[in-house]
Amino acid sequence: MNALQNKNIVLGVCGGIAAYKSPDLVRRLAEAGANVQVVMTGHAREFVSPLTFQAVSGRAARDTLFDEAAEAAMGHIELARWADLILIAPATANTIARITHGLADDLLTTLCLATRAPLAVAPAMNQVMWSNPATQANIALLSQRGVSVLGPGCGDQACGETGAGRMLEPLVLREQVAALLDDTAQSLAGKSVLITAGPTREAIDPVRYISNHSSGKMGFAIAAAAAKAGARVTLIAGPTTIAPPAGCQVVAVESAAQMHQAVMEQAAQHAVFISVAAVADFRLKEVREQKMKKSADEITLTLIKNPDILADVAALQNGRPFCVGFAAETHDLENYAADKLARKNLDMICANLVQSGGDSVFNSDDNALEIFLRDGGRISLPSASKTRIAHTLVDLIAERLG
Ligand code: C5P
Image 1 (cartoon, helix red, strand yellow):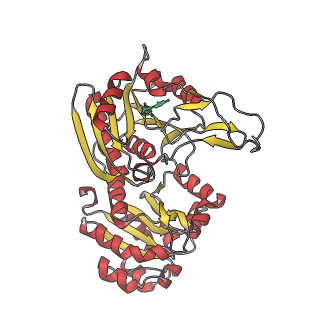
Image 2: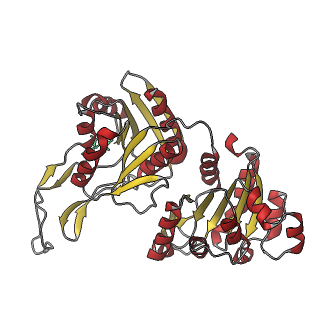
């Protein structure tokens, strides 16, 4: 959290219901030592009063480009220079679109154009607006430009719907912002890291597939942390709904066979292989060319085993990278993890308990890991955000690489 001490943060607040959480976010950032200047869009005033932000930040909230008094104290270009980070939380679909397209039609969007500081957005909107191709294309473009996209989370929405689009909680945002501003030494500088993430899909016929609950969040967080630690990161990702992290080379795959091929083509050129993907263990023996009809009351699908990507990489004779596996278990964590470490010839395995329903690990923003090492060592990482866990894990790997 020291990364926030004395950091200047412009907090952009847009007009969405999640704006009710923004005063708490200001408090949390200030608690950790940050100086926060709130900049509201015109619509944000409909949700929270500028006076609330003034009370919690100790600075008058700004909301217009054409405010003579505010401009005389600190002009908008000066404010853009003052910022160590611009964080927009909540970031509505409208403001995301405006900054994607370089508009400067209010103070906040003008600051985004005028600053050299990193920009982070915490999207918050109705789930249909979030999944709309226009919003997704804007988010992908912002990510490519190096804008950090924090969240959104999944769950119940103010509109009564359930899905992706909730703003991350203030404490989670604070951790992610601290990670972004943490400019400590780059532990993986000059190293190349290959990561698999997300689920795989095994086709049954042209419209159906077998898959699992993996969201890709853990793998993407590790990719982001490795990139931040200075590594050249290649991320081989199965189908996910979240935006890939900035600064990584992303290869999108669907099936385990495609993931296997993509990994085996690249593995020997990387110093580290982190296998986070929830690879389907089996695929259909025969994928139907036409949609199966439901005329029978009972059908039998014959499945055959997929190649074990991680074991194949760990068995490489030439150019074998440092191999890190993941193990999600419902019980007997220690025994299964130790068995996998030995059987797959790994350097490190990160195990977590999956509670019934699977959501506690797969879709959550938090995780806890038990790490088992080849030399018999064991490290516990207690529950924290996946971003925080990813940074710690990257540091542990870097230490072992020497
Ligand atoms: O054996 P199990 O599937 O539990 O092992 C989990 C670890 O192995 C994970 O790191 C996962 O990414 C990797 N794995 C793989 N290819 C498979 C199955 C699992 O790389 N076919």
